[in-house]
Length: 149
Image (cartoon, rainbow, N blue to C red; front, side, top):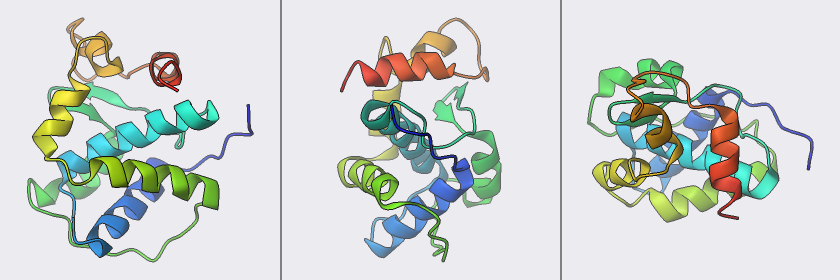
């Protein structure tokens, strides 16, 4: 297993927002939250470690990183039309994020919600136990996504 790179979710969110904006497919806060979840999952799948240190919580509409959610909640369901000049990511991690953006960013937010809500997903395993808002354990994320590698 490779040494874990420790980003915070806001670094990754800014990268995603900027990348999607430049590609002409800007994201809403809801879509951003789902992309962060899939990025974390893809990192577990490819590297066996998380992309960012923030915990993901099981909220009603799927997995959420609260700090990122509250930072961009004023946008509600509208696209976040911002461009950030931060590129603190290494090349390997940028490739992982770009893969998720390529696969998921053009999907509707509600398609992504449906995907995260499928039976047996990490969100499902926490939320269905009536644990709204609880943290999705890292080990649950790791096992679920790593098994799909």
